[in-house]
Image (cartoon, rainbow, N blue to C red; front, side, top):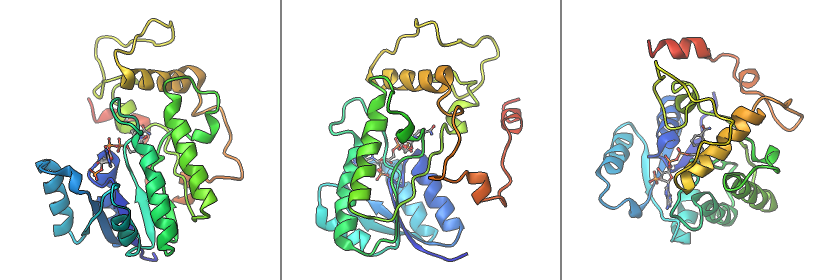
Length: 246
Ligand SMILES: NC(=O)c1ccc[n+]([C@@H]2O[C@H](COP(=O)([O-])OP(=O)(O)OC[C@H]3O[C@@H](n4cnc5c(N)ncnc54)[C@H](OP(=O)(O)O)[C@@H]3O)[C@@H](O)[C@H]2O)c1
């Protein structure tokens, strides 16, 4: 396999830490953005150091410092961003911070491929999504438009729902382990989200489980299905996955 120099942004997050480990595991020269804003977050600091011990380069860089982002981009061929989605108290939403990465990639001029933080429902199919959850799709589409306007080569990964969040808890919001007693069947309109983040989650559940937005479509010419791209991977069935909880 051809090896690349890969920068991972958001490398201590839920998805980001898996991307860093996979990237190192596949022998790519791996760079991880080290934001000064993590301050004294010991867990993040230790995670970054563990990447360094495994051969990753920690690159200082802040979304508040354009020059530091340009310098980071100049080191690599590929940029993968796994910045978080909706946070109830942040303005602008984190996804839109990627507009700063787009500017930096454009200025650096050497990046051959950018993977923005997508990894969920394909936002291009969610034009009719409900408020407040549609913010996720609107923000991701705004980033897509900026990438395309800047003519940056890109790949959008639509991961639909991560099994780790959804399957183990039998699709129950906020549950990771399967209930042995009962499950709530959503759809009667009575489930209330207590705060903004929960309301965002609930509207996503509506589109996924009630409308079936992840299943009621064919992948067109614009995309490829992952198991066709990577047939060598031994995929886990839902049955096999759930047996881990027995
Ligand atoms: N398909 C699914 O089921 C599913 C589920 C969850 C998420 N997703 C998608 O996957 C992507 C990553 O989500 P995640 O759950 O992995 O995110 P996460 O763990 O909540 O956060 C990822 C990273 O975002 C960065 N970040 C957070 N606040 C920031 C700020 N103010 N400024 C700069 N960076 C900040 C941090 O990077 P540092 O490491 O630099 O601190 C953090 O580690 C999102 O696009 C999300 O929508 C999909």
